[in-house]
Image (cartoon, rainbow, N blue to C red; front, side, top):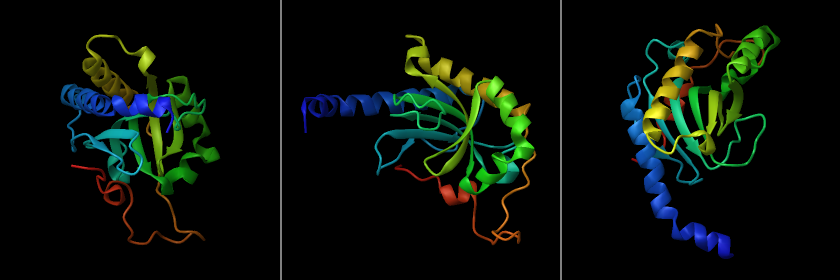
Length: 191
């Protein structure tokens, strides 16, 4: 360990509490109903999220979910600055990746991009997310700002339904009964 690790370790507990509090407060203020408390990846320690009800969204029949996430890196963006960031939008099982990246949906991806939303794989799931950096957050009322931003992102995505048909088995057959999305995601994380 070097001095940067020691400095990070010294503030780890306080940072964890601040991230959990920020996400929990934002979730309570959003118009979407949270389905989980704040969760985090116990193997990575750098990804925190809240899942929301997908009722009435185009993610619902796809077993996708609405998500607000804070991560120690922006790996879901095409520019990848390598800094902590916040993602908001819809997440789908990675089995949908080929379809969302297909030429049939090129105009859809372009329309999303014009609105600041990207389609990328992050942490094994397809993310249809808008991104904010902490430098873009106001100093006060950050939870209200994030809740409003999530609601605006979801309103934008509601106007841009991709009309996904769902992934097929390799070779063109029907999918097996294996769960996708929310069921395979299992609302994973620590309680």
